[in-house]
Every structure is written in C-alpha cells, then in structure tokens.
Length: 181
Image (cartoon, rainbow, N blue to C red; front, top):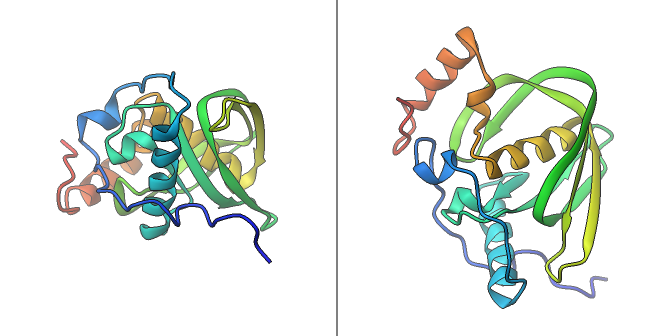
C-alpha cells in the first residue's frame, strides 16, 4: 500500500517545447528558491513526462529555464529509478562508451544512435535543499546524461555527426512546430 502521493498526481500537464525553441538551446539558471513554486514545478514535470510517456524531463522542455529535472527510468537490469534533481551536476561519466538509440520528448518520434558513457553520477539537491547523489548505469546513465545536457542548453541532436545528424534533423522537420534549421 502506498502512503505517499504518486509523483505528478497533483501537477498539470504543460506544453512541450520543441527542438528549435530558444529555451532548449541556452543554459538554465540555478534554483535559488526551494519553496512551494519549486514543488509545483516538479509535480508539473512529472505530470507532463508521464502524459508524454517519457522517462525523463528537464524544466526547460516546458519553458522554465531552471536547473531541475525529473526521471522515472529503468536501468539495463530493469530496476526502476524514480526521482528529481535540483541544480544537478554531472560529476562522473565513465565506463565504456555505447552508441544506443536515443530520443527526446522535444523531438517526438525521432531516434538516433547517440554515444553515451555506460555509467554516470549526478549530484544535486532535493526539493527541500538536501544534498543527493544519484548513480546510474546503462539506460539510466543515458537518461541522466541526456537531462544534464538539457540543462546546459544541449539537445541530443547536437551530439550527432554526419549522416546520423542529417537523418535526425530531416525527420525532425516533419514534426509540427519543430524548427530544425
């Protein structure tokens, strides 16, 4: 039996910002107020992520340029990781580099083989300002790196080169509202 609310159950689904929106291509600002507005933002992030059937979502993807993201993501052993990070910093990314399929809720329906480290460690804070350290491997490590990239103003297509990048951007041009140049 659950004795805590389901993340996002009190949040509202917000409009997703699509590739080309300036908020996705600029570094986000650190959170300085750990009050009720931050708690509402995290709830909205969960609600929006679940509505879009994603595994992670950064605040900039709903137009809020703050260093916050949420996740509900399995690792390669199918262990579920659920949480949020405020002012996260990618402190370690190591292990083998794998090219795996990666997509983004800001470029729906488009995937491309993207290189990421197989292990990642992110340090940040919880809603109430308590320090937290999250370590991930496999698919969850990919998610952590992807969301940290968002907060730095980087979209996964920025990591692509050659025909992978061309193919992803060409597919992105078919996404209504996306501006892929």
